[in-house]
Every structure is written in C-alpha cells, then in structure tokens.
Amino acid sequence: EIYGKGVYLDTRQTVSTDPRLLEQQAKNALSQKSFDFVAGGAGEKATMDANRLAFRQWKLIPRMLRKMEGQNTSIELFGKKYDHPIIMAPVGVQAIFHEDRETGLAEVCAEEGLPYTMSTANTCSTEDLAAANKDGERWYQLYWPRDNEITASLLKRAKDNGFTVLMITLDAVPLAWRPADLDNGYIPFLSGVGCEVGLSDPVFRAKFEKEAGHKVEDDIPAAARMWLAETYSAPGPTWEGLEFIKKNWDGPIILKGIQHVEDAKLALEWGCDGIVVSNHGGRQVDGAIGSLEVLPEIVDAVGDKMTVLFDSGIRTGSDIIKALCLGAQAVLISRPIVYGFAIDGREGARQVIKNLLADLWLNMATAGIRNVGECNRSLIRKVQYGG
Ligand code: FNR
Image 1: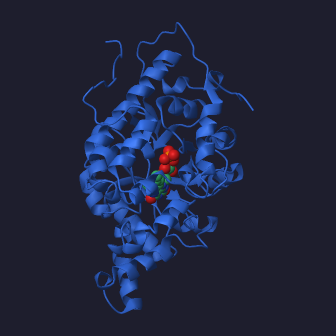
Image 2: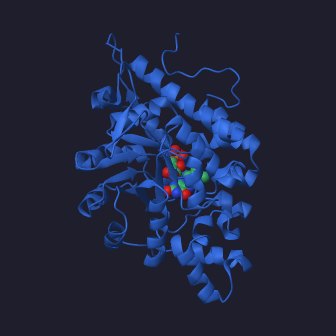
C-alpha cells in the first residue's frame, strides 16, 4: 500500500483533489449568487489574498530517516481526545449550497470524527442540528445578541442539546462591505434564511411579538431584520459582557476572530479558555494581515496558558502542518468542505474531508513528522522569493 494507513484513494470521486479545481466545480454546481457568497470576501479581497500569500511564504523543512511507525494525527482539546487536528468551522446558511443543509453536514462530521461547530446563522433549529449530529462532538458558535435574555436562551438551548464548547465570533459586527453580494443584491438573511435559530427562539419570539403586535410567521422579513439588528449591528458587545456569558455557560469558552496580540492577552485576562486566530476567511476587514502571519506572536504571548486554534486560508494538508508548526493546537476548515458539500451534498463533503486527512497524513509522512506533538518551528521558515 504505497499510500499507507489511513489514506483514502477512490477514483470514483466526484470532487477534485486539487483545491482550485474544487472551487471551480463548486462554481459550476451553484448559482452565481450562492457561489459569490461563499467564495467572496470583503472589499477587493486583499485579506483573502494575504491569507494565501502567508501560507506561500512559510515553507516546511522536511526531516529524513526518522522512525515513522505509529504515525498518527491525534490531539487533545479541553481534556478530550480527537483522531485529527481538524474542526468543522462554523458556516452559516448552508441551505443555499445544498438541500442536505447543516443537518447533512453535521451527520457526516460525526461519522468522520470531526467536531462540528454549529453557526448561529444555521438554516435549521439548534434542536434539529443536534439530532442529526447524534453522538458526534458539537460546538456552538454564538453571534452575540445585544439582549442578555436572548443570549441566555440561546445558550440554554445549546446546553440542553449537548453542545460542549462555546465559540463566540467577534469579527462579524457589523457585517462587512462585500462587493459581490452587494452587486448581486444578495444577503440571504434579509429574507430570513440563516435566521432560523433566532426566529425559533422563544425569548426572541416573545420580544418580536410584543413590539410588532403580531407573530413572527406573519412577517418573516420584519422578524429577520430585528434579528439582524440584534446580532450583527454595531455597536456590538464589549469585553465586560463576557461576565454574563461566563455565568450562563459552564464549558470551555473560545473567542473567534482574534488577530491582535493584545486581544489575545485580553481574552486570557477575561478568563476565556481559548481563541481562534482568524480573520473570517477575509470576509470582514479588507486589507487586513494574513491570519497565519499573526499566529506565532499570539502563540508566544498566550499559547502556554490557553488553547490556540487557527483558521483562514487553509486549503491543503501542508497548510494544516504549517499552522501546527507555528503553534496552533488544531485548525478549523471551512470553504474546501463547503465546496465539496455544494458539489455533492453529504458525499461531496465526506470526500473532501477524507482527502484532506489523506493529504495531511502523506505530507506528514514525507516530511518526517510522526505526530502533531512533533510539529514545531524548527520545521518551518519564512522566506520571500522574488520582488
Ligand atoms: C463563514 N464563516 C463564519 N464564521 C462564523 O463564525 N459564523 C458563521 O456563521 C460563518 N459563516 C460563514 C459562511 C461562509 C459561506 C463562509 C465561507 C465562512 C467564517 C468561517 O468560520 C471561517 O472563519 C473562514 O471561512 C475561514 O477561512 P477559509 O479557510 O474559508 O479561507
């Protein structure tokens, strides 16, 4: 078996193993506005470019003749063991990509051993998602409502439905300037798509019904607008608000969207258990630094005291190893899995996950890295070719 243990090789695949072709296949499978929504970014996509450029500039330095028996990719996070250093990133509005929607993807992640992070911008309820994820590991991503009573209600539903880790996304307030969506006149939320978690929440519903004088179902767009104002509009919450969250959540709390080292330190000071170094895949601040660039300084500042996860720009197994070598404990994967999902629903997503795991395995094997613990900075260097 030249591809070794754990490697998936199936010539009947419907998804490409080449990240650029994969994106092209997703483009062919989707309407233009849905494709633009997933593939697009803020402004002139300078941050998306920076994310990829950062990965290109960091280079692995392979080791040879090492004892590779027992190679594995397992990790431990918050006291739990996982077979792979990969978590499904929170991705909202999946119904616009495939009819299998979040319930389908959550089922696949459970089967493939990946924690599934449910977005607040889900197109199904928290309860339906949990049922589909069965005995999988599920994390809850919060878009943080302004009203504490609504926040408490969302968190209670998450706890009651077996979500173990709370991930609060900080970098999507307010929603950014995204030219492709603006030109397409397409914001799925405005018609209520991706507002299901909010519109099904009893506390939000009572608030809407009191203010509007009628039921949510009688005017979904109006209810959606109120939900958007509740969760995505500026000004957003501040650090002090974390006290309320901590009182209403007893598991690990992670902040997603940290890029500045001072914010990483503040997350620690405010008692958070982890952070996701992320720039939302270049979908929020245009002209921001590539997410990988800030990872080493953040790891140096807080990495021995809290869990540091990473996303934004990962497309290959090699990218995953680079993030691990720079100190991330695990990574979140987003667009590649969504592309597979868009191409062939559950099966497409499953193939992309298996391909990524195989690519990761092979790249570790060829670079002489036996396990995640061996990933360190002696195996990576920043270079700059050309002008
Ligand atoms: C996202 N992302 C995201 N993040 C989040 O916290 N809540 C959400 O609901 C969403 N929704 C979402 C939808 C779509 C279509 C995309 C592409 C992304 C951001 C996501 O979790 C992750 O941070 C980035 O996608 C990582 O960048 P790459 O790897 O996709 O470049």
